[in-house]
Length: 147
Length: 147
DNA sequence: CATGGTCCGTCCAGAAAATAAACTGATTGG
DNA sequence: CCAATCAGTTTATTTTCTGGACGGACCATG
Image (cartoon, each protein chain N blue to C red):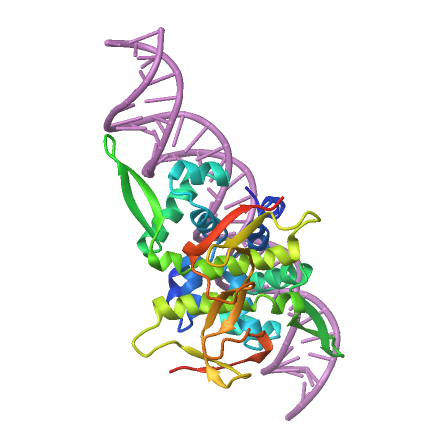
C-alpha cells in the first residue's frame, strides 16, 4: 500500500496518518508549535538533510496545515506558519508529548513544561468527553460504523 | 538521523515518535484499539507485506506497548494485546481520529462513531487542562524548559 | 494416511522511497 | 571582490518495502 492509498481509506486515522504520519513530519510539527518558522531553523534544529525538510514542508503546505508566507523582499523569503487546521493538531502533539513524559522522561522529569495561560498552572492534557465532560478511558469507548 | 538517535533526544515528542512515529505503526495501533490481535488479521486488514507487520509488532512489543501472549497450544500461537502503556496511547489515537474526522470526513460524515459508555453519548475528545479542567487552546499554552 | 487448510512467521531479490552531501542562485554586508 | 545568509534543488547512495515463496506445527476431511 502507498501513501496515496492511505488517504483514500474510509478511516480517519488512515487519512490523518497520510498527512502527518511520519517521523519527520511530526518533528516538524513539534517545532512549529514551539514557534519555529524558517527553513534554516527547522534544518538546524532537526539536523537532517534539507531534502526532507523541503519535502515535508511542501507536503504540509499542500495539505493546508502550514501556510507559506513571505517575510521579506529582495530576495523574497518565506516562512511556514501553522494554519487554523494546523493549530487543531495541538491535541495530537500534546497527547504525544504527555505519553512521552510519562514513559520516557528521565529522573529529572519531563524536558519541557507546559503552562496553561488561562489558569496559570503547569498542566498535562486530559482527554474528556465532549458530551459529559468526564475523562475518557480507552476501555469506556465503544466504536461503531458511522455510515 | 536514525530511529535510535531520535530516542536519545531530550524531547518527549522525539522519544515517543521513535516508538510510534511511522505510518504502519500508527495503523497497527488503530487496529489494536479496534480489537485486532492476531498476525493474520493485521496483515489482512492492512494489506501490506508480512515483513512489515512482523517488524512493527516486534518493535511495539519490545517497547512494552504490546504484549505477546499465547492464546492456544499445539501449536503455540500468540496474539498481540495492548498493555497499560499501550492503552495510554488512546488519547493520541483519538486526537488523530478527531482531526481526520474534522478535515477529511466526506459528505456522509465520519466513518466511525465513538460512544462513551459512561454517559452513553456519541462523543469526540476534548483536550482539557489537568489543573482547571477547561478546554486547552493551542494559543493558551506557554512552554519552558523543565530541567 | 495423503491432501488441503490455518496460522505465524522468515527469507530473498528486485523495486521504490528516504536520505546525505554537494550544489545553485539571489542578495547583503564589509 | 569575498564571505555570509537563506531557501531551496540535484545527484548519488542507503534504506526500506514489496511480493512471493518457504517452513513448521498442527487440524479436518476423504
